[in-house]
View (cartoon, rainbow over the protein chains, first blue to last red):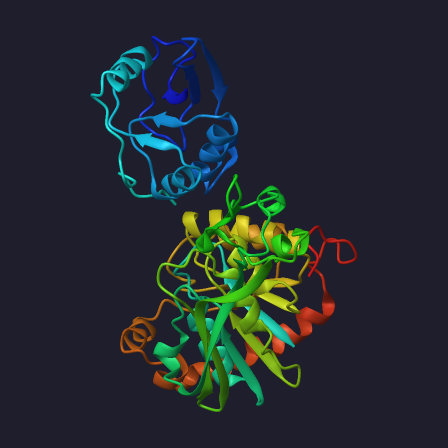
Length: 119
Length: 293
């Protein structure tokens, strides 16, 4: 399956971006093929509001079934849930380390947003 | 005639000017408190409010039996207030600007608009003035739709004074648009002048004739006066920095009631506005302003 991880840089050694809606980019990792692509989160740069919604739409369109990030706000969470995408928060370290944590069951799925929205 | 009272810097005395001017103008006169995020004219006028109207903006309501999840509504919305993935749409009412576009583009006619309350309009009388104020609900991010609804109550049979919010952003432009004249209230300080420059730029972009009132005029420096002279901006009134005005203010009393000698200043201001509005000398491009009223 495809996982979207918020990332501060373009490689698997890059740090996990702690924000979802305003992450710099997403790394889309395919757990079957072990390959990955990057997707810049440019739409967030222009949004005064609704960045989380746009980010959620983008990862849904990219076919992600799960997202891994530091924190996820309420609007993003609502869209991700409606799209049936699992949300794992509290990830740290590098993207590679976060994927390993996820696959070994150390990262758990959250049932709600873990931070407030920004205005 | 519609006169908007604005400023760049907050706290310069817009409400003071609006309230006292309205009290000194011939009747009929309306005063509309267009600072809907924090209306405060009522503190001084203590109006007898006789009616209260709820104002809402239209937000989409999707009929899931008709929705085919085609995604057109989500594609159209600039504010991400309606999102359609593979599912029936999610609505974020707090982001919705009430444009109605989603309902128009829906090919199945599945979207209805229903009203989401954002604030209230209060109407009444105070000291012979026809008083109206808008009051935005706490937590609402968008004052503009309420300001627009309030301004629909302007009558053209006398003077209408609009107490505007401070600054130069959307709510201010919404409040001042379509006025016949704008008074920019300022103070004679560097902050006052800096923000007055911004306000002048804004009023010129909207294309309205304007003049300046300097409040607490003997308390600061000369730079505002020199600026107005250089730019050929009429100074309509200079109010003194009189402690008795501040004391009356702190009691919630209009200056012209505490100091009846001040009435003549505000009557003069009213007359001066009429003359300046007709002369149009501050309007740089009356035929083609960048922001149409």
